[in-house]
Length: 387
Ligand code: PGA
Image: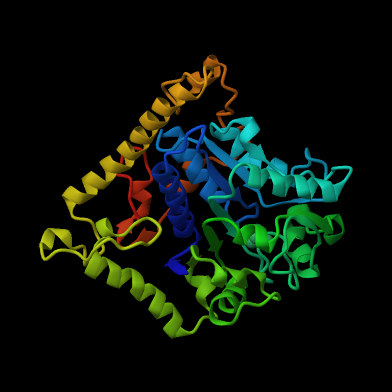
């Protein structure tokens, strides 16, 4: 398991969004081989979504061949309710990117037969080939999705009763009134998350420090369901400094040292996105990034490759799309022209009430390995590569 520690929630969101963008671009999804992404709700991923919207609008990633599955949904809350997870996902992500409506999957907490709805969800995940990357958050009680303490580590999508601690935590979204918080939810299971080919968790804040410590430093335990990631062959946690408050100093130092040692001995260019190491850095000084800061030429190349990655991905998907089917003829997968081609993609300008990615990104002040992320997030500046 990888633990990436960043200064604060902004840097966590930036790192995570960059990671998701690069995973999608490296995957080069096509209609026949889509990228299947599991997505959480909650306050923690919001800024990740704003970054992803920003990347989409800048043409750095396309969701044209991405399939999404949301993690959970309240039972009995109308979909149109602003706090339904359906409304949340549309508000923060789906309404602003070029996802095809038929590729968006959410649980229906108002289904007549909730058990059948849960089975339908599991079946759909299997039908599209399983989840490639499950992005998740956790609760202070260590729940992953709504898998509260005591959930079976083999559980699949089902109805779950929320723990009192979760109801209390979520009351902030319902005017502070615990009575308004739904007490039941549909949620993917711990087993559903485990079945994903990769799991990426974002954990921020001192209120989640105990859960992170239980997850990392103690055994796999159904009372801290997030700890199941210890059993996953490809799991990564991105957390902020506050979330590490309950970890042993040696744990924090160890995980921080992994990044430093890798940078010094291996070099970023030899480390795969998912952490695989192809070879050690050569003796050529230009091949070493001991300082953690890309030399100017490499930084430029990094910027260019970020852009060309997306362009290349775009070109590739266009090429494969040509064989896929007749209605999929756009040569500009990042363009609003899609609509004119009969594509029902939902790219749209965020509603006035939607917090602007530009606003939230503009005041970013965190740094990643010495690279200022605030500059790198403006369209005119180089796009930083934290990996
Ligand atoms: P939060 O919720 O991101 O709002 O903290 C996460 C969760 O409860 O899973």
